[in-house]
Length: 299
Image (cartoon, rainbow, N blue to C red; front, side, top):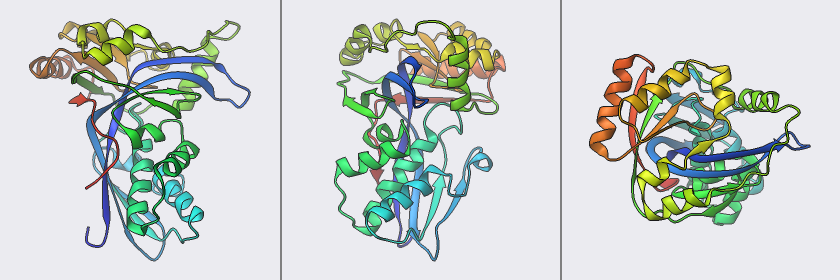
């Protein structure tokens, strides 16, 4: 848009999501291995008389357009820190599945933050931007960083990871979303009275990422929230089965779901698995993407 700044931000898949027991503050300690993948939202900010949010794209009607939107909250936090009025129009061109466990809302928050930093010329350091991201939500810092990273604490403390190659994925988009707090609540219910171990990153998984070995990664992916997501949405089991029968190396619920992620060996296999998923009728869309990709980028 003329006079505006546009930032492209990727989706993520959790190749490992190890979840500890509930903390006193209601959050959970995590060992969260993020991989940024090539499905993108684009966030554009332009000067305006007041803060407003618009959105276009698949399921745009499900995106909040008020101040609960993470993009709006990001702009307000940056404006408050630099003594500005948050008078911008935020337009989100959405392609990341909504409420799908792929951090679409977090991506929009990071995108709006980077866009307004550029629009206003605040000169905020990367550490400042990451600090604001962490205040917004557990996944927002990774949306800024991209690539691959291990998130600890509640996921916001990042250590960048080496990746030795490109991994190919298929994502099955389900009808409707799943609330992340509801999935964590179900995790707590399922583990009531059970000692939940401290979350630790898998050494085998980190080695597989570093070597770029898709077969090794397929044997190491895990998601401690998967049981809770399947409990709330049992139909996802059929989606996971269909992807494996279609040729996927591994199948996993992405984050809190309900999007399911399928690791495949190459681009040709990705196309075949996507076709098999669609033919089985277990999802309403199948998206192909590769990772890792860069985090938030000004276009």
